Length: 104
Image (tube, rainbow, N blue to C red; front, top):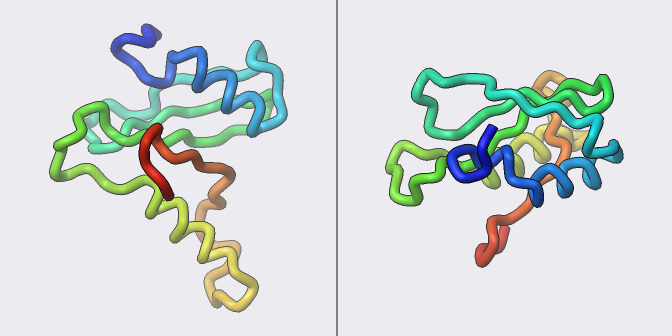
């Protein structure tokens, strides 16, 4: 992967993920998950045997079909509320970060 063409290859992202997931960056494997033209970029992570999906917003800022990944994170987090009848039936959101210059 090349950090210029693939945001998941950026060393800063690898360091942040390793810190958030509690693994060494040398044990963090990141592979593209889908190239079917999805709006958000998706990657499969292997964090020392723990398998996760990384979703990043598209690199094109004015992509009208792009979804708000932080909004999706908040929704997944809300589905884990103890009073939610579907608790435990949806993917579990692990961590999130705001893009530089934006707030969540």
